[in-house]
Image (tube, rainbow, N blue to C red; front, side, top):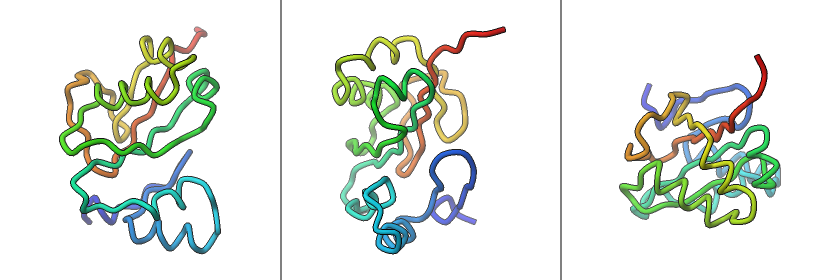
Length: 129
């Protein structure tokens, strides 16, 4: 099965091929992320990224998740810069200390290119022990 047709069900958003997202948004009439995907095109040369926020990052961003469009060839560092610009009041401080998962894999190198349709999880430092 190709990545374009992969479905992942779990906490947060479900991943669908773009045409599935269009149908889902139309069926539910949602103004959320599924409907947002309906306005996106895969062939415009850019990269679409679903960003999910957890814990204090969610509070700072004011949203649970959002879709971000970046130029083709954008990296994780480019995505983080875009997030700082979108939420300049509280999120930059949290992003400076946060860890990131790209499609469920820990990001060690922020120069890593973003796949179109990828998911970036923003994980602020957690206390406990």
